[in-house]
Length: 306
Image 1 (cartoon, one colour):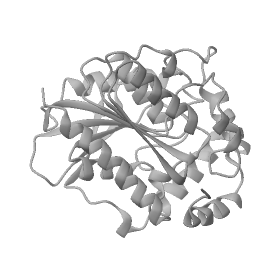
Image 2 (cartoon, rainbow, N blue to C red):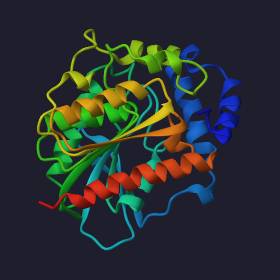
Image 3 (tube, helix red, strand yellow):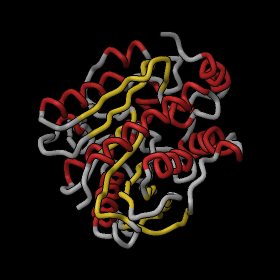
Image 4 (cartoon, rainbow, N blue to C red):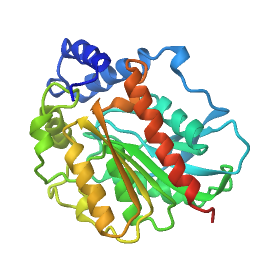
């Protein structure tokens, strides 16, 4: 189906700017913050009971993080959230509303992790931070108000990190992978079909990879579809119809299922990459985000504490 008409208006606005792949990383980060933070209206901020800064372990020393607690009575499951942005852009602020949405609608304590970014810190810095933070949080769930369960979530590059973490850290309860990058060395039709005009384009994907990617694109810490998938926690995999990453996300879901993992995969028609951060621009994106988080909440609710 065609792109959602309200997202089409956003795409027209973005098209007037300098393409990200023609920018330097600092300029690209500022432009992304403008779109994700500065354009956010106060009435669009999802309410939660509290938000506080803290530190978590990282691969090369402590990393900043932000903890969100729901308004319901605990204890709750805890969710480690890794933001998207191609491993180059994005931060705690750009993904504040996604953290709030998961906190409120999944009834979970969410800890959003500020991992190191490329090109200052190329692969595997982000992976090392994600792994260290997850192991740290797994030991601190009670301190955070948790009920013993730790799940992971992420969008795009963050979905990649969440997928990798589940393969390396045993004992996780569930995973939410939102349009994840799962196969850096693969070749998928959606990369061509949706490679231009839908927010994330092939040129920008290559720009991200030039800054971050390992020498071997099949390294499972970069391409989790190449890793060991058996015994992983139940997964919700979210894809967007008009996203160049659509097919590899769905291929990863199929590989999980083949490995015996309980997985629910859902494609949102008319949506583009990044739609979970676009609810203030599009009613359809807002509805799709609510549905995706609701599916994750259902999976969390079906996993017994401890």
